[in-house]
Length: 146
Picture 1 (cartoon, one colour):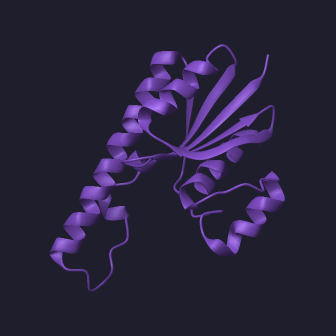
Picture 2 (cartoon, one colour):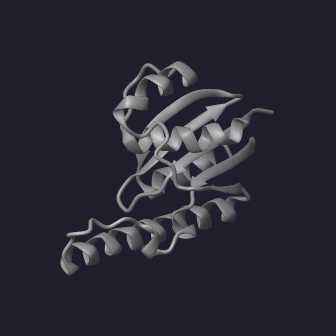
């Protein structure tokens, strides 16, 4: 039986998703919520885990606002964080419905930005396209390989 680890960086429109099969990064992309469900459904018979960035584990006050951000900017940022929290809840509900084990990881910027992109490629061997969200998902899944 294959060991499948899905890493997820939840987002309000498309989630960053990475899939490791038997320790090898096989898929890296951004997916709608329904496509994440279909992916988990496809591999449901495998030994599968969902490693997700825990946006819900941090209060909105834990997110950084610029010192000079206006009330409107702060409100918009809080709205976006709330949408990501709801997205996380939906992905976790689908995983629970399918019997997929869910493991939370702290929010991390590891592999997200350009300077760490080369480390991401070196460690995972991934040479295809990626963006900040998909690399973040790859990092969440990588946590499950340890």
